[in-house]
Length: 251
Image (cartoon, rainbow, N blue to C red; front, side, top):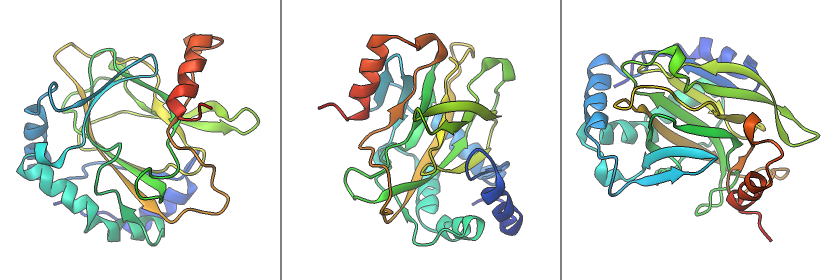
């Protein structure tokens, strides 16, 4: 289902990449599988039984429902929830990972023209299972994506004093069949803070799944994602109030 992965080489890269552990895997799915998934994703509805986020912090559509996946997409998510765990262990040396089979925050994601996702740190504890969210796997399904359309996945360093993103360290183009596996437990600020500029009939498309471990004793408890304002949102009281509300830490 996936192309051969040289796990030993990627293991060295995973733990040495900055600003937090991550690896990039191009040509992830076998070509026939990738093409079938792309066809199925292209035909998925963008209205109806979908989750739509449309706020100053994020603009996207998500489909986390298994019964909305067609055959190959369903098989692909099943593979990521089971057989792929052994490959993840070989690449990361992280044991006892559990997949989030409910796809909480995962599934198929679409960003329309003007879509964005402010830099953020993921929630730390799963709201249903009580486990720590550890890894995020994103697989991009964009047959065409130009650099000037923006939509890059950005990884930022952490400003510990202010609990905020400090500096962009890497921008990852969401090219077709590119997978990105990264640790979301290491103050991992990530997102696509610049609004996308693709033609109106093209969506920025991806598959996403999370993996969990038992919580650490010193974990920072976040019931929901903690967002950061974009540069043009700095010192905006309404945005700051929205960030607090969205974080789930309202008194």
